[in-house]
Length: 74
Image (cartoon, rainbow, N blue to C red):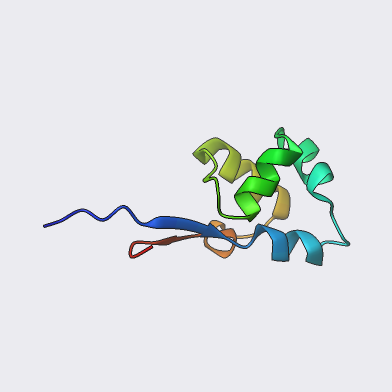
């Protein structure tokens, strides 16, 4: 069986903007990251560590699967 790499996608931008226009800088501050890191994650250029992913999910109060998805074909 071949192992595929896959891709992590996210809905951070959509959720963040639905939260009273929460800025990237404010989200970064709340989760202990840099604004540049949040920008890269939202753009799909960087997959966060599990620790950071859980901090983001906790900040939003959403189920993990509503914030992050794994596409095994990606």
